[in-house]
Amino acid sequence: MLWQGSRGGAGCWAERAGGALECARLPMERVGRWLGRSREIYNLLRFKMGGGAGVMPPLDQDALSDGLQTCYRYLNQTSRSFAAVIQALDGELRNAVCIFYLVLRALDTVEDDMTINLETKVPMLHDFHSYLYQPDWRYMESKEKDKQVLEDFPTISLEFRNLAKVYRDVIADICHKMGAGMAEFLEKKVDTQHEWDKYCHYVAGLVGIGLSRLFSASELEDLIVGQDTELANSMGLFLQKTNIIRDYLEDQLEGREFWPREVWSRYAKKLSDLAKPENIDVAVQCMNELITNALHHIPDVLTYLSRLKNQSVFNFCAIPQVMAIATLAACYNNKQVFRGLVKIRKGQAVTLMMDATNIQAVKAIMYQYVEEIYRKVPNTDPSSNKTQQIIVSIRTMSLPNGVEVSRNHYSPIYLSCAMLLAALSWQYLSAMSKASEEYVQASEN
Image 1: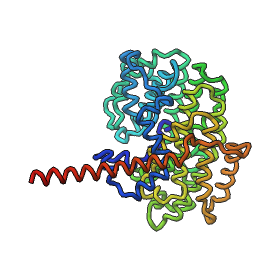
Image 2: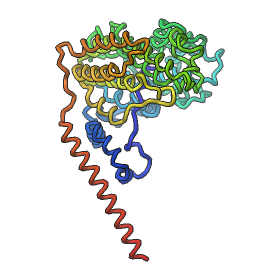
Image 3: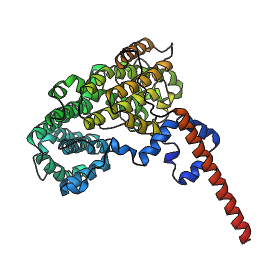
Image 4: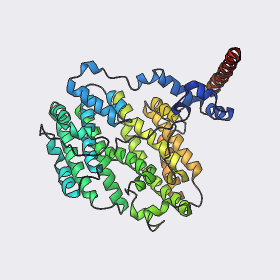
């Protein structure tokens, strides 16, 4: 769904044990790679020291009712990607979006639960919106990891009913339409590219439309934001298609298929055949065609973001979009998508999050990553002309005056020197620590 953000990468910062001392033991060639990403390391350190509060200020839990505190706890348990940006939204919009998320998370949990038979699941999906007005409705038989949102649905539905009517109407309407769309695709596969767009509309485009209507209802954004459903739909489709492309192998292992037959059937007899080593070249070509399809949503994304006025709403909308383009750039022409999960680095993700705070910065980010894709387009790729054409269009829209907006606020050479000094300091301290240990052991002996 739209709520599924891109997963950040790891690197030294996700090592299990040893912390800084473990980093000190890394070979110097790895330090060299760090120096090439000095700005990412700087931003990661800055974020860990509280620098991210300007983008995502913490929520005052003490000001919430017991029910809302429970809802925000569920939000943090079920969403790594969206919890922080939802909690950073301004005013009453924050609670409305939190409840919207949890309602759709509960609906999505029903759809994903393969232990629920179709005779039970289809009516549940169609009727789910009505459960919002049934104070005692809950579902206790789910085996999914997010089952708590179904088991304690009365708490969520109560907070839903406590929202202003203008928010309730939007959430219930989107829940109704999404449930019907999910039920439709339970019993059929995605064949054509039109059906791919339709499926993505049901599970993500509707989220974008619902959020946009909530933004306008809060009066933090103009009415046009909620009224222009085509742009809002594109916001969702860009994220959903990115997830579907990236998660090919994971979905295959779990028996799910979301790539459109119209595309993959030109490259293989079965979608699962793309994972076979002997088919890797055509598999990459198929993926490149789907990435090219997804890139066509970027002009709508930029137009949508250019209309936003409220800073918290802009951050909420822009951050997932820049994560998505970075993910597509990492996936494009990359065989690793068919061998394992392709992830963007954690420092890269933090840098994107801290940079994407205005439309000019977002345009610069989009330009950077489509240029990265452009440089990787093989001349022999069947979609190469279409890929290059859409990138040229995005270039023009991102840089109308032909001047790129710099995203670097600090000189790379200063950052590199700082990181080199830190690396040498770590190695020195590590060596001193080891020498001290040997000295103590020798003394004891």
